Length: 141
Image (tube, rainbow, N blue to C red):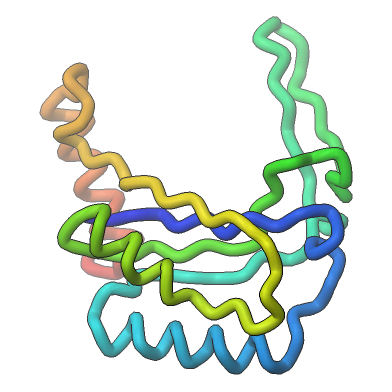
């Protein structure tokens, strides 16, 4: 099973550069994930001040673009991992070991990545297309 691990940030930490200590600890943690064979991808994100949101109104109006920073947001994402684990419990155990050398309060969300079999309306044609696209993005085709 694949899981997306969403590392939350807030308006204070969003604008801060991670400390050298945190970067070193995260590097060691990422190395553990790689050696265990569970890390598929993982990155930190640039501050929301460099981002944009595209807002769809649900009408015929063109989408609206809102430039960052998103200081009013209570659910900013600071980074992510994609982990392949036996089950949710294994993923939780890995994330409980995530470094936090500065002792910052925070929240990390874990969500299973949906598979084609999760969608009862998935046609064989769309499932085949998804498989081809996944292979292409992995460099297999």
